[in-house]
Length: 363
Image (tube, rainbow, N blue to C red):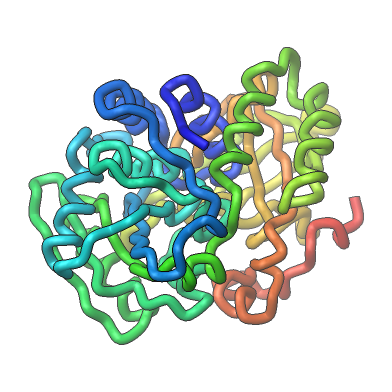
């Protein structure tokens, strides 16, 4: 399968929905991806199972606080320069690139690198959504080392990493991100095709295209699209899709702390002004609750869209007064395993409760 310019709008739209508020704003990366594909041609989208076991794969994407990405914009050359810097640093040739996460920008940056370097991109990612830290990727959970890795900043500086584990790498890359203005492009978690087949969340890029097509073709508000969304998700690796609330943003506060966007948003329900949904944010939407009742939590997906158009809204674009709908979607089964929950459960984010799967939470 090939990814062409004509599919990029659908890919970006579906990826923003799956990114749970994070993964970077897609607007500028989308324009760059269109330019790259018009210049260099379509990109091969590889089924992970079709990779040779000895193929060399590198993951690539942006690291930092999404709010910064609205000002510190990427260029056409950053993704490919990062890939070239990794190959120069290691002396190895990359056969394919893969995404960290199915984020708005982070689904497009590896595609740009693939187009400009003539390599393929793997149909899948390391999260099936977006999450804020490196040790939360399926690659790391499956034991793939994050290094050797390189980071490329907006001034063209290249920093290499060789760390003993992913937790150490996360601390170091986050510190460099803060020192570099809040945003980096990195190439990391190198692996063989055999390792990738075990570690990747498969099929998410092609699913994002399907989802984007559905969202683009839909005419009507969030409540009207729910049956179509439920039908699509039910036959995917996600499963359950639920509408939690429709209402108005009455408060939103975030700040950049330690290289992350941290904060909270409050939504007053249209049908009951006494019903208030609070959304906790760390780059992504992590927790939806009504009072003390948990409606949905990480690692399940929490998605906020414009109520009238169903356009997904990144966390950094939430504003007071917006009319929105909040959806929850079950995460891929991989993230419900014991070893995955050790890295991505609510307690890993400082919440004092255990994970309960979305479909087990009463409506």
